[in-house]
Image 1 (cartoon, one colour):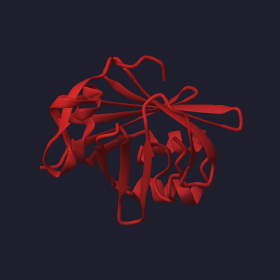
Image 2: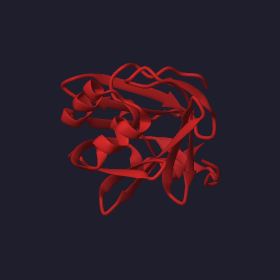
Image 3: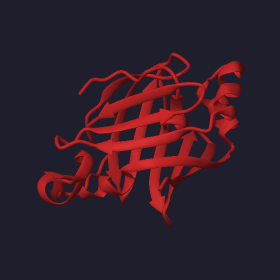
Image 4: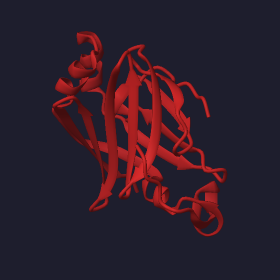
Length: 176
């Protein structure tokens, strides 16, 4: 599936290849899948919801490592995005980053590469996989690759952004 990210969140702000075997789940209220009927990967369900950024460590260094300009890094450092993760009945995952500066969105299916334009204008190829319960994004452009791992731990979404030897960690709390 080829999609296009809208301007705004860039790597880490909205922000493999082993996949867990599909299990049965059914669409629940508001179209959110729940456990009981149609084939979609149950491991993705833990990421569904609205997540608010509560901490960000080393993110400016990460943005610098991926090549973002000073102005873009300043915006990225000031933004406190909410991530809205949804899963439709066809297994399409949507990650929407909402902040006072910009709102961006990407749609994808696991294990299917797609085109993504980042907030700073990089044209990248991205692929998401599930690895050991983590939602892993590999984003490649101009011979470079960054990895964004998202996992749920202790009711928090932890996003680990890696570019070469630079690692940033952003922590989100699920909204009520």
